[in-house]
Length: 216
Image (cartoon, rainbow, N blue to C red; front, side, top):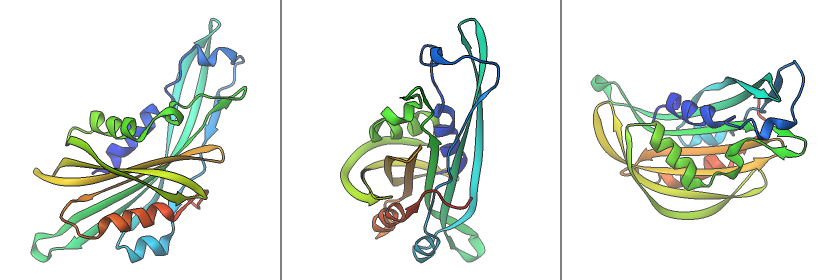
């Protein structure tokens, strides 16, 4: 699955708040919220065969009308994506797995959390991926289990699905989890071909090894 599509999926919804929720806001200056970057332990990723190009920051600007005044809200999210590839010689490289960690600010105003991600279940999160990524279809829940991530109990849901990769339809597994850690929500997603034996434990270990904050 493309990391860019994952960015689009979660960044777009990271600050979908209503003017009603923002009714407590007044003033002329933009309100800014920024997440701390999150990543998985580099040695764990390397041992599992995953590499990353670093952490990407994505800012979202939204304008809201509050009490007749227009107010600007800026949210900065962070995405760290890891890819597992194998060299096929004359056929080039093939992507065998993708693991992404997204941190998005809780956006608290007057003690109220405005980021809707906080209320989303794993089914809703994978549904958002499905609705915004046309190549992912036939998503069905397979199982659910708990792992420890950042000192919290994270519920990880496993889904079966089909994905279109370079024009080919393949069967994949998708693992999704989310927790609140300090002032951010942390979302971790792993996608890999179903025929890739042993990859589930790699994905779970990557989740267990998530660090927040991490150096972007």
